[in-house]
Amino acid sequence: MKIFSKQGNHLHKRTSRRNIILISRLVIIFFLLLAGNTITFKYLMQLEGRNYSLITSFYWATSNMSTLGLGDITFDGDLGRLFNVFVSASGLLFILVLVPFTLVKLFQSTERIHRELPRTTKDHVILTHYDHVSQALIRKLRQFSVPYVLLAPELSTASQLMDKGLNIVSGDLDDIETYKKVQINQAIGAVLSDNHFANTTATYAIRQLSKGVPIVATADSESAEEVLLSSGATNVIELSQMVGKSLARRITAGDALAHDIGYFGNLKIAEATVKGTPLVNKTLKLSRLRELAGVSVVGVWDKGTFSIARGDTKISDRSVIVLAGSQEQIDKYNEIFCIYNIASSNVLIIGGGEVGKSLGTTLEERDLDYKIIEKNPLAATSDKYIIGDASDKNVLLSAGLMKSPAVAITTQNDSLNIYLTTLIRKLRPDIQIISMSRLDRTVELLYGAGCDFVMSYVSMGANSIFNLLKKGNLLMVAEGVDVFKVAVPGKLAGKTIAESAVRELSGCSIIAVTPGDEININPAPSVTIDEGQSIILIGTVEAEKIFFDKFINKN
Image (cartoon, rainbow, N blue to C red; front, side):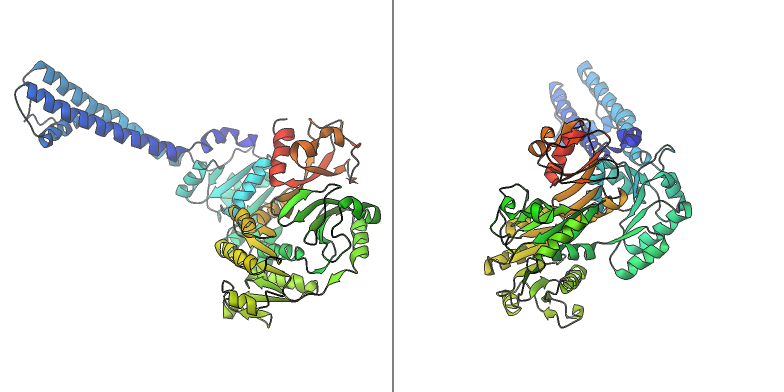
């Protein structure tokens, strides 16, 4: 992010931390000096044959260090008078030099906050709110070397965010001048992730200056989405709807069709459950899917673990396979597997919020029966609801847990989700459990508790926004797994896929090469990747980071 380099020298300084350390040192030095002067005064007076208490000695030291010098207690000898000079001088040093210098350093913290960006700033992303989603988005922007700036209306907030190493400009979100100062007309997009009231106001302010800059906004309801689109937002993301649909795709009950995840031009990424199909207990090589339908299995989810597809990868009845191919190839796959449908009992959804409702609607579209366990009776809108506390095992049992093929946990409380996962896994060790998480840091905890799949609200939001801003360069397959597109790095140019050793060195797998507008799907290992082309890869977040570190960031 070179356009922020001049500001970055200031933005990335941990000023508050340094101020605390500076003040602490100053206070410690002062009290040590005061204590030393007190003890030395008492000792020198004893040498002159006079004895003063510690309180009197402390009184003398403070009055002389403050330069008041009341003169009621004086030394008779030269040694004592020399010490008196030292005490007064040290007091002057603190009062006239160190204290003012420290105060200046402290009050400079607001002066370092930027109110605008240089006019040469371009191709940057403007964010208007700092939350968990924008934190994850900033990490993704940094990874792909996309410059950004975060707006902060309050100076105190701006200072705190700058101390975290973020690129900050202070300005009111409803002020047109703010967006003029951050060069909105030269930005690649603006991200509005505050509440929909603030997002609507910010959208109008931006549209007063620029009719064309893409605006990606978040909303928590369909009516909010309509208002934001009417006010000028380019894209509006209802994260609850997206998470619900994503969770529904991973329910192993029902059909075995391939369900869309997303597209990279003509390359379609989809996923399918395999329970009840002839694929169960076969290796990918023996499945002959590439011969039968032309699709490639690029990854396999099994019991919460994602692995890059290999010929000897074995498919279990709880596996979810990730497919890559053209629209025709995915359609061919569905023609073959559309006959497999598992009749089952109700899928249980815990939590009747927006995510739970979206999940239920998606299951309905797949002709799957479901029940929603909801604690709040006012949230029940149909006979699909069971009113009760899902943390009570009797409620789960009466809802049909012992017969249900799967449970989807959609509450907004990650701690509750972890508890419910543990309880359900204890009652039904064989059941499929999928869950959402509000925070990235609880994903591993949910897997540890026994979840088969976890979808992070934060990661899905950040990846979806990034994909809209970068026009399809990133696709989140599931929590912790991405499909991403990059220009061929110089270190790989001119090599065949086999020679590049991308899979061996990073853990990512090349699933397509794009020479120009064409896409070579499922390229052979002998295909050469040249400079000017792009490659599409799949891998875990960790593997993705290794790929960037090895092949791009050090290029």
